[in-house]
Image 1 (spheres, rainbow, N blue to C red):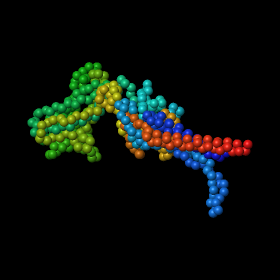
Image 2 (cartoon, helix red, strand yellow; image 1 turned 135 degrees about the vertical axis):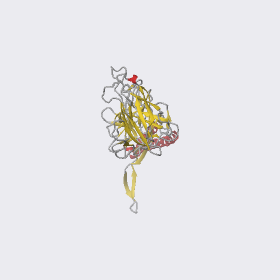
Image 3 (cartoon, rainbow, N blue to C red; image 1 turned 180 degrees about the vertical axis):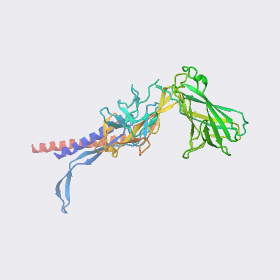
Image 4 (tube, helix red, strand yellow; image 1 turned 45 degrees about the horizontal axis):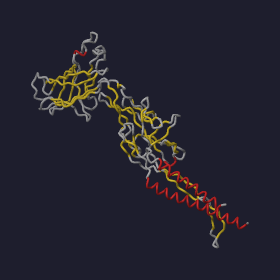
Length: 438
């Protein structure tokens, strides 16, 4: 009888709504959980007649669940103090590898490290991103697991290949007066060496000679190899004290300093010209470019009437260090910090998004899978293409609104009771009809 089937559809639909609300409430403390809402629609109708004016008289057949809609609104972001935690502030999902060659998507950033140093989600799936080689991220490379050094892992040293010095040479310095300056550089084994640059006014106005040398003791134990001699040359300044030309000893002509074609921007300090001057610690001899321009292309050595002084030195290269900690930046880059003061990018967490969020399939563990309805996921870096930024040491909370859920719970309960009452009413009517027959 339709009298029974109609309220039964209501009981089934209301039961689904109650289950949805119960699931929301049970996950109100689940990281990045997204609440759902059950929507209903009426079933088909049967025409049982028409009015005198020809309007159809139709009787409905009940109700059905039209959809369970997920609310992808932003959850609050709470600080945890845990460096492996990450929260998304905006649209998109983290990408995790499911172990079968495919990807799943999640907003739950409660990550940890496995025994190999890979960043993994709570269910053990690897967090995917772009690889970094020597600290440089390649966003055109295929995605791979984000790997972070383990505690105590050693960063290999790097030999110095460039250096710069910001200094002024006093234009009133008497002839024959030397002004020494020092800068620390590192060899291929990470041992520091003090390079001394000695400036002295030249015989011609607005010219200075330079001499760059390493301590002889740095070479004295290298199998009889003697230290190379100092590298020398001449610097020329204009009437405003700007460095305009350099002429290394042995060069036929001076070279203009600048960024124009045929200008020079550095001086080659090759302390190992024949590959024989091995350092005392067994490292190869140093070959360093002395940069003469700052980032804006302005010479960083001047000659004006004030005391000669060095205001800053900089050289790349560093000694070895052990891994101490890491941070996840807002763009997803993961920077490892070492005891030698170096920070090195080891990868960049990638994010993804889809055109139709409601078309995603829920898999549990906070994971989603793409479907034909959702469309293929598009992948990019955090903060680009409408994707979220990442907050380190934090997690996104569930967006379940307990007040709203309790209100919906009361409505669903009343609807369930009303449909149950309809069933009992129809049962009473049916029983009375049977009694009348008998």
